[in-house]
Image 1 (cartoon, rainbow, N blue to C red):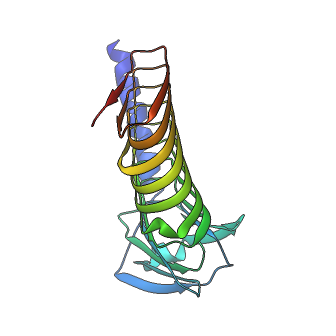
Image 2: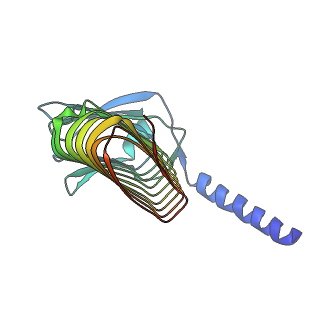
Length: 256
């Protein structure tokens, strides 16, 4: 047993040395640079860094980082989504990206980075988080039809000032989604331990399906449909008509 433990420890040490040995350390002062890219309608952050997106008639991208980080930065556009990445592993670096765009349909984080945006012009907005990072959106009255939200990591998505027709949320990790504003309908599906914090979101109709241990809190006016096959629960405000199908230990409880 001791020998096996020593072997595992040695392997972890070797793998760590290989990983960090292949990383290039950021050097020098923070430099600013304008980036020219093809036109895009979405942004995906694949590395640690901070991205801020604002509305503007003309598309522009400005990056702040150390020079050797800028030299290895990639901003390829695929399927109308600009993918922010590094061509090699970097350590101890700073990466700030400032984007102005007339249209934002996609905001994704697949790492430990952060995307912040406000006042996006879009009919349908798709937001996905698959790492430990964060996504924050403000002033979402401009998303007129649908907001699709998915998280499979441990990070947090916070969206405020929503005014849209429909919202769908899918949680399959330990992360959380926090929503405020109003919508006509919301469909919430979760299979992990993450929570939907939606007391500050008012909806006419809500459909909640839970097969994990995560909880949903929601303010619902007209109709609330709930299916629970796990230990998660639904807490609601309002006086909606309620239909339930529960086969787990979860419950539906008024928070009025």
